[in-house]
Image 1 (cartoon, rainbow, N blue to C red):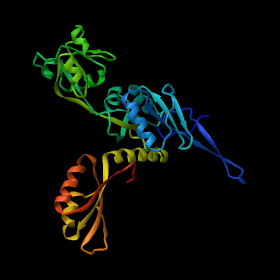
Image 2: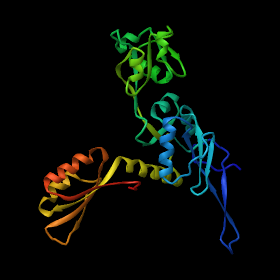
Image 3: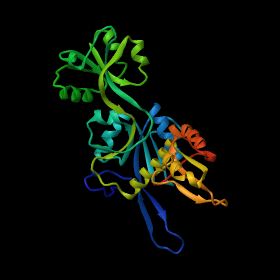
Length: 313
């Protein structure tokens, strides 16, 4: 069955599920399934699947499954290579996808970011032998091995540099030792792999990356897509924030509110003792221990930090 698509989408075959009407009704309602791409393996896949599960979506039970149909939420998940996901989303064949920002940029696909998901952080850097002093200008005329040729080509063009870009599918660190390249451009996390191969990163980051939820660029999201983004965002924000509750002398409320402003303002409630108030606010998880210390020093009591599983804004 061919379903109607949003304006600008390429026509595609769309799966529907049939909802039987209640007793006494005489019709059925067809609901179009939202189609979402998820990384099929690796660290991106594991973290993305965990967030989707916490958001209430069905997980695949077999790592070999390429699709999972979640009839309760009207979503069909497609497990694809992370580097291909942006291409599928840009084509309109899939509605949304989770992939790395660096992979989406290198694909050249027309996609837009809906949400940074808070995992898979890395930077994309040039690297060369540690016993040599390199700058980006030194790349002119050199051989650069990379799995991200478009990112490198774009950056070199911005510097007015011409070089020979050698595309490899992985393990680019060994290419210099094997005489295939003079320098590399690759994803850098801790830098441990570079050091193991006697390499050091140089120059500015070409791309600071993390996992992102993407859609077609400039496409207006449907109601179903907005709901999906809101659900995932609620879990991501829940991982990045905690809820702080504490009792505060009324005379210190203004100073305490500076420490815990919340997303808009803290919730303040009266207590049985008119000289005290109860305060609640969301605060960044990474800062909450220091904040609890500061509140205690200020004079707050009964300070509690609670995990947030999900939220809506």
